[in-house]
Picture (cartoon, rainbow, N blue to C red):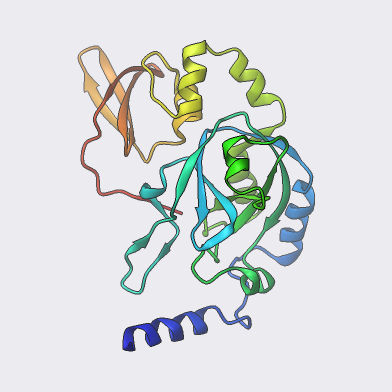
Length: 253
């Protein structure tokens, strides 16, 4: 009981509507960024998992990495709290409209649920077309959310992170049409396939949690480390796939 009251007090103090905006970006710059992006038609650069936005089950969360390997909030002991109910995959090239870029200002914090990534910048996306399984699960959920890191320092940071995840409409779908059929299937299902280029690997799996340099028999090889496996690359081409070595790094945004 004491622990529950302590947590409640902690949340009440740290989430008070009177708190200042949790971003160093000036309000006029935030407004300009939002205005510039609202209504933009874009495509996912990377295939993403989707599922519940923590306790906010009115929106979908998009993540290039499995939900069990990412966290955006922690409990009172500093232990990671992972998003729940990963439902499936939204493939690279899927078309969306950016409806808003919402920064963690006082108004946003007042409307976000306590057990959600309240202090992140949220990119609100609406699917251009029906997304099959995602749509059938709960047609009431209109928005997909991409979470930007909390340490955004300015407009250039924001634009860089948005561009890492989203491309202008038509660019990714055209690029996918130029890939081999087996590579397109691997990207759609978030699989690593020998023979993939570095660009194709990232479209499938997202940015690796670590890049490791290894000296192979034929020269320097780069290892893209993911929780599900390692992709070994030579001259920017995947030459083999291996089980992941033990790592302590976990993605935190």
